[in-house]
Image (cartoon, rainbow, N blue to C red):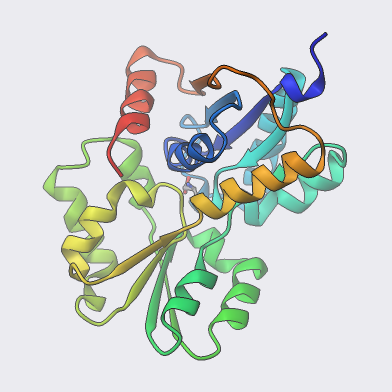
Length: 259
Ligand code: DGL
């Protein structure tokens, strides 16, 4: 008989960005089934109001649970900052794992360095980020750089086109040659790591929250007895609120892109 552990893990983001997290999840938990939902019809979340993001996140989680998700990963820093606590309170029996900017490992690696945190305006505005920055920014210098427009540009694909590098130069170019580490505090940004390095210089180290989120999911599934025990590799499904063949092909390309 199928038990709850046989269910899938629901993963969502405002769009393609969460696919960077999904890849860490699959690498850490290759026997789990994952259903990814990207809300590209409503992206970017990082430039919406908090109540809009909360409503969208609530709807998506409700739907994933109705479809049989055994656990949820919020593969979006913005939605985690806005909605994780509310969603956990609404669904106390479901493991709900979020993501946050990976400032901790960056600060530990560069205790006296300068760390740039790239993220959405909403993520950088909320209390959760300010707590993180005041906790880990004790000795290193933490520079928060909101990146309006960047996630929306990444959503359009064409990552090798020069306008994308120019957008990144406009956002962080002033730090070229003057930064030790960059925290990719939005799940879209790991897809443009190479372009950010082109702007800031090859010596910069990058940190993102994907692997930490994957380890956290593994331990939550273990603690709750929900780890899948199956002989076959897990299945991965990709879905989007922009449900067109072109959009799904874009999602598939992001799933396969070298990172
Ligand atoms: N990928 C999301 C994040 O991690 C949000 C990007 C957006 O929709 O603004 O914050």
